[in-house]
Length: 322
Image (cartoon, rainbow, N blue to C red; front, side, top):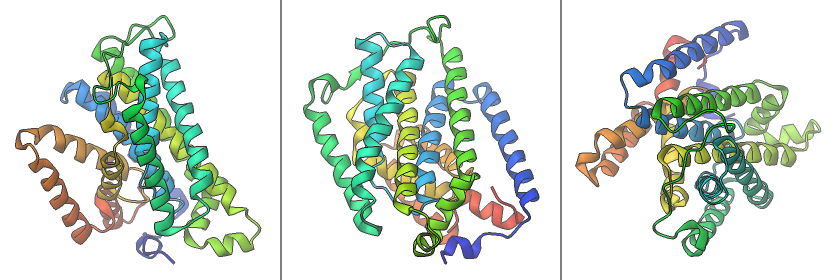
């Protein structure tokens, strides 16, 4: 049995649902009120990366599959959304859908190859595929190479609603994030999600019960990649830029860091982790390259003192599930 299963508090299902409902209401209230005291552009970036971290957590936290190449789906969805919006005149919703489908398609191909292996071999295959597509992005003419795709336009949403202002764009990003978050919540609390948790805990026993675990893992992989694509496509519209940074291996490392700092296998942990890491990068930018070192120190502290992450430790102290 995993360490997470040993340390997780045992609480009644009704109490679990109540605590998660309260947590979601607090999260929603924070998302609505955040622009009043946080710069809207920064908050939109946080929401995009929070959705990215939640998508990653769906795979590692509930299936037990560690992907070191999730920047592949995030970054290429960013490129596709930016390119279709700029070159083909796609409206925001169509650009986001295109990015989501790109993430899902790449996830289907990469997942079909990677799930044949487990553990470190699975992680290395995902990293190798991501790096292969990174070098393709460097050479491909439509990506803009080192310059990326700049000045991505924000056209009218559905051809009717102007989202060129930060306020209107924030409403769209908040809706995308909350919709993605609720979808992930529904997945992990569905019968499908319960099978994923069974595979994480003991795949051999799940197979003995008649479940075709490879199919479940592949579907979870595709869902995670698709939601990562949604986050990447939305981010491209927010910052109006898609660059090599989005597909670089360090982006995959950042999402791992966000998930572990917030709380692996928790519903709200990745959101908190994304807020901590992105806010740190923004407010400590004056330290230059020292930001990476500071992040490393915080990561080490979390691993040593808060093994379950920020949200995981809070949930353990309060004897609830978050």
